[in-house]
Image (cartoon, rainbow, N blue to C red; front, top):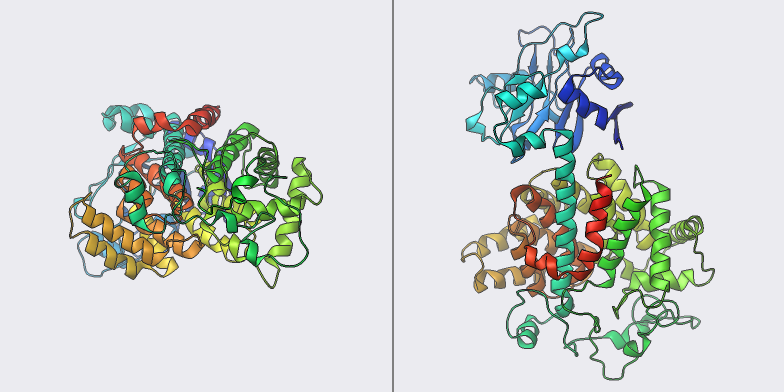
Length: 572
């Protein structure tokens, strides 16, 4: 199924563009690019459209720039279509001025940050001449700024195979089949790491005193465990069973019970327990996932099963919401004891009319969202890191789409489940980072960018430098990470939890298993924070070969039930 992207009122068929890259086929989309002086840059799974900027006759015609700082471990494929009037183009949408050219030639001037690669002079295009004659494929391995080499120009896949791709894995990454295989690997590892991080944290979810972790489990968590019968700081019996928040916060007329009647059908007794120490996830076993991640897995299965060409569209949201309603309102579909405020709030409103069809559920959710987003008193319990698990499938399944489409898919859905004014901004930050990492971008750099956006980068740098004084995997370094998460945000509120999550992503960008365990042993809201962290670490690890250990995957029962089916559907 083809994917499309749009830039400057031009629509390009990504599948056809890939065919053009490899086989030189004439494409109307390519004609449009040539006539409007744009060129295409394929980076991983992202098609970027870059404008060719005429600079006049200054002797520097035919210079095309590709920013070296966007080339990482993966082979990149770039195409340049040069018409008679083309002078030069800037990499990734920027223009290349004379200072950049001078620097590339060793002359004066500093230009912009990053390096550019100079390529061949422009080709003259005559009417009737196949545009495939203007097509070049540039294959580059990772390079440092001081290791720039002149690119090789190959006009066919056969020549590419003979000339450059001695390593079969590199050749595969240059083909449509190989690219889709990398998409599946990224999505697969993100899903497995999401499940692993959630399952590892489940028994110590909301352990706010890290000493309780060591006491209850005889040391730091190193794998999957079942929860203890008692939770050291449980406030489950204070939680509101009729809606969001705590019982003491509820006001106005008494509403009907949601817990026990609409959702969590046989769990009300645990919420009403007089002991006050019931574990939030009692009933789950080692390797099980919590309710939020189960909802995410079901959302992924619904989206791939629905065959949606664009998961940012309303029909995709409608299908996921209809499945969500059926899942939570049907007795015996899961074993978790806890449902966070967003679920209780949603079904407290839902039970008044009880829509079940996809169209009616979407209509209800949109009306409810509009009311809550426009409220003078937004529900603060909806501004929580628990907003991220269910939006993960929307981003993952938009890996081959452009960034804005992926962000829109996530933001438009989260407005229906967590209608709080601040949540869309935070989801956008996370979505852009995950989408970039799925496309092969550096997780470390994406985490830094997100932390700068959140205004917590300097604080994180301080903790990072301190952690660097101690050996990797040492308890001393773990203590620094625990202190950082405790300071940045240990609880559920989105900004703090997101800062903690991106800090851990930055520190463990090349070590998914280590990052998952560190997150677990930091305690607090580690399940939802962990699910979001795991998706990032898994996606990044799919490029470096550092993924979730196979023995962990074997122990993830919910992952084993859902993920193979999702990946199978992605192959169609």
